[in-house]
Length: 223
Length: 223
Image (tube, rainbow over all chains, first blue to last red; front, top):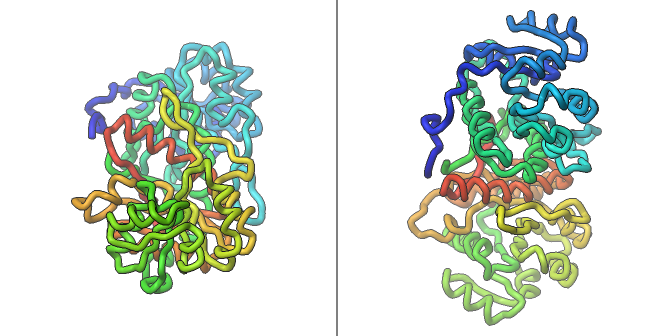
C-alpha cells in the first residue's frame, strides 16, 4: 500500500472553490462543507439572484455561473444532467486552464427507481472533457449524499470519494479536496474512460438506500 | 437500517454449489471458500478432465459443465466473457428453474489497463437472463479478488458482495451465500438493469490495485 495518506497530497487549503449549479442540494451541500473547512466558496447559478439566495443560506458568496467560473481556482460542476453540455459550452473560456470537477450523474427515474442513462461521449465527465478541451477535467463526488452534506448534526461522512482523471496532478488536487470533508477520503479510481460506471453506480446506491433505509456510500478496502 | 444481518437471510448451508468455468482463478477461489464453509462444491469445465484436475487441487469434485449444471442447487457462472453466451445457450435445460449467479466482468485490456466492454444486452448478467429465460439470474461476486480467495494465509476477506437481481428470494439466497465467505457480506444493490456498472467497476478496481499496490474491494457504508 502506497501514497494513501494525505501526506502525499498537495496543500489545497488556499484554493477558492466555485460550484456551478450550486443552488441544488448536492452543490449546496459541497459548498457548505468546503466553507466549513475554511475555503472561500462561490456558488454559481444561471441567475445571480438565485445563487446569492442559496449562498446566503450557508454563508458563502453567490454569483452568475460565468463569474464563478472566472474567479474560482477549482470549479465543481453540479448542474442537472439535462443542462450539462450547454452550460459547459457557454463557459469554455473562463474554465480554460482550470481544474474542473464533474460530479454529475446521468440518471433516469421510473417506478422501479433510478437507472443509468446512456451518454454519447461515454459519461458526463467525458462529455465535459470533450467540450472543455482547454480544461483539466476530473470526475469525483458522485456518491456523496446531499442529505448528509447539509445535515448540521452530521460531523463526519463515512465515504471514499472516487477520483478519476487522466491528469495526475489534477486528480491529486481533487483527492486532497475530498479529504477536506471530515470523514471523507479521496481515492484515485481510474482514468476518465472509466467514469461511466462510477456515475451510473449512483443508481445502485439509490436502490441500496431504498432497500436499507440508508444514506449509503462506499469505502475502498485495502488502500 | 433494516434487514442487514444474516438473521433475516435463508439458511443456505445445505446447498450444493456448482461453478461453471471453475478452472479459472476466480471460480477456483470461490470453490475453495465455499468448500471450506462446508458446502458440496462441483467445479465445471468444458473438459471433465481439466475440471477434475482443478478440483483435486482444492479438494472438491470436478465434472463437465453440463453435469455440474444439472447436479448443483445454485450455479455460479465464472467463465471468460468470450465464451459466456455460447456456454449458457448450451445449458438452458439443465439450468432451468435454478438460481444462476453471474459474476462475469466484460472487460478489455490495453496499455492503460482495463476498460469496460459494451454489451448488447446491457451487461453479462442481462445477457444471461436473456438466454436463460427459465432460470433465476442473479449478479454477484464481481469484485472478489481471486488472489485473496486462493491465499491460504487470508482468513477473512474485507468485502461487501454486491448482489443484483429482480427476484427477491433468489437475491436473498445469494446474499446468504456471500456471507459464507469469512469477512464478506452480501448487500442487495439493485435490479439486473443496474448490473452493468457493477461489472464495469471491476476495471476501476484494477486501476486502484495498480496505483495502490492493493487487492481492493468495496464496503457499502451505512447499511
